[in-house]
Length: 626
Image 1 (cartoon, rainbow, N blue to C red):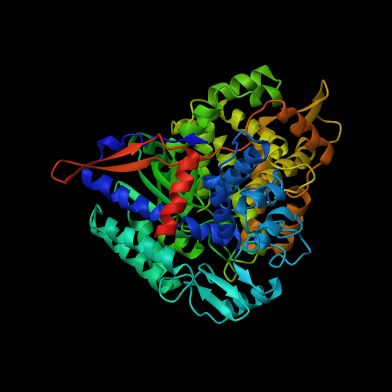
Image 2: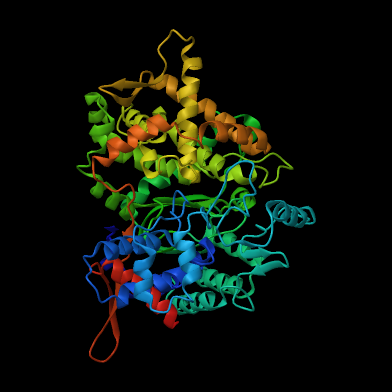
């Protein structure tokens, strides 16, 4: 667990600090929504576990208790009983008899204990296995008593009956049951208690807003939470894209659809941010050249936007993380997700500098690099350029990649179904990979020279081919869309390398080789590798633009799902010896209101001393009391 510092927070005005404070309260208030979305039993199980944890009177060094504590911390970290990335259910290393002995009367708890200890009950939060009913085999709590066929028919009918170009994201904020949709809203809706609390904090924040547009944004978001009308959300999103004057911004709502195997339902997330002015100079430069990037992309001209609109990019400092952005968070975000809003109104992209800084600091001295790279020249390149290139790739991915290209007329936004998210992430990553090696990056001052991109190419492929699998248990498939995206690009590139270099006898642009019994990566031709990325980007864009479901399915199922078991076992064995954690997450700062002797608010001060366990228990207690 890491901490992120609020760089420059002390330089903000008191009004700005209070705006951040109340927005932060709204960000924390939605925590229970995500727990429930991830699985309908998560909140009950979390409450049970926290009761045992806080009331335990025995030896806290006992093996059963220590293993129980690890299990509880995993549940906190993943916002439920399933892994936040792999989606598999956690396996408890404490005994059922032990936890029953802590509960006394276990009759009420028995069904929850059955779920915890029975591997075959709700084994996977999100199932994307081809050939199965993805709804009935997923533990996520977005659907009740309906099948995949029924879900697709329900939303297919809604879309077919809609007339106009500005189609709402049907299903984004509802639970679909056999009786119809249960809308997530304050008025007679699901999550009414949590949303009402969020609305209160948003309303409290409104008086400290920096401008009238921010006040209007809060009014629209509160209205949307009250009535659940997706058209209101679209109005909010259109206005949010155009609000660029304030120092402070926020994300609060049902946004990303990765947690739904069919990609309809938005998981709840929150983020409060303020501008990192010095770092933003770079992203503004990228945004100002958006049309050049679009015009010079290697994709078919039919898929290019003739006019890129409304691209804005900032580097920001996170002030508070919540929901699906907490404790594990993204380092870059591009919103809104609706393609028609992007095309007509543009998008906002952010790179989160204080989160990246915390990751980079934690990575210093990591033995990972030398364990999986034995080329001293490449290690030197990574040491010199990796942080800079990773940041640029994130900026290109978020600022321009997601907003690039266009659908052909008549292509439905959900044409790729369960493969959409993987294809979309691959498209944005390939956009960044292709342009990281362009001389334009040096001309714009975004990279120092034309050797820099080589570290990006090498580390990206190394991750996609080998090292990202340390996050997956032996025998499991790749489930998470970002991990699938990286595997797709890397393993497909390995196949394409022979074609690019000409013949089986020639040296491939990319090779995996074994030295001293260990598998390593070598990039033999970086220019050829860029040509491979260009080809991949063109094909991935074609698949999205044309809605080619079968092509998406073929690529993803071939390259992005299954793992070579012998290679996976080797990677896990090598990684285990390093004794480092495969994931990192963040503890939020605590924002304290400071008052003078007369009770007047004089300051808001961040406190970085709260422990992970205390923060989790405090959040749970506050939400229960609310």
